[in-house]
Length: 411
Image (cartoon, rainbow, N blue to C red; front, top):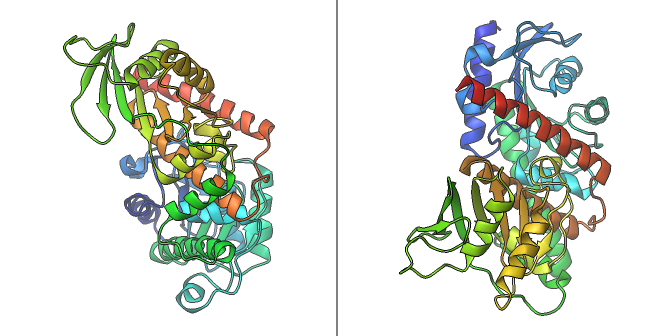
């Protein structure tokens, strides 16, 4: 295949995966074989929707060398192994797709696929052992899984999935079918435990919340989103409605004829304590709400959660009779993290921009889904080790800070 054609297919694949919710922002990676010696792969830390042919990196299959200043994905070694081990594979997709990520928490392969799933993927999906992103351990785990199975898909423990194909269309079909296989596996586990059939994930999350929560339900804190505008925040109901301008220093509306929303005090306190935060979003997603009802700290079961949300997701209750003290407690639980659970009320997610806060929200919601799935699979103690979470968090923040600074200089 011509080099430029391979680059074009990689760009096309990235857009297709984003459109279908299998990849978001810069997460995951895509590659296409050029010949027996080279493949084209997505660069490290670039948005898929903005990629150009000049951004796609050509890598040597045998020694992983490449030309130019743009760095290829840190998982280039895994892609190279796929091409070396599977002569029939010309396209590789690594995703953090939701249900495949959750299926990896079961701790076992998915076996005995039939019908369409078997035709597209093979008769099983092996689970690769865990390793930190970009490490030899992760690569070795994937290689071992590929060697013991002829499947076109591999689950990556605490991480995501790898989908292989003879073409872009083939690998894309594997990714789509894998998500459905994994969704059915999780819902089947719920049926096995309860004897009931669930229509949506909310039923699974609510079941776990009901079996795990302690005591009476706490007060439900109203959901608002906000953005910093210098010394003012614009506070808007999460469900939509009128925006209120609030003084960050006092937590009071600029227009004194307007009553202060209950969220004003908490949001303004977050901005005062966190100069790095310019946007706050409130997730009332089913999984986040279920986790907040349980009222316990959510630990990372997925490595993107550890990197982006934090080494843990703490929970604090809001007492309407003690609003200032409650707000202080919630802000303290947010320290060093990008999200916090408010008991019985979902999660507050923060970021340096609304786009970054949205990324935190997506990862936090998936992390709460992972906590629910781990409970269902009986793997609630099979979390990523704290030392590994801390290392990933530090590396992610360091790289992100450098990238943000470079972008500022460029602008």
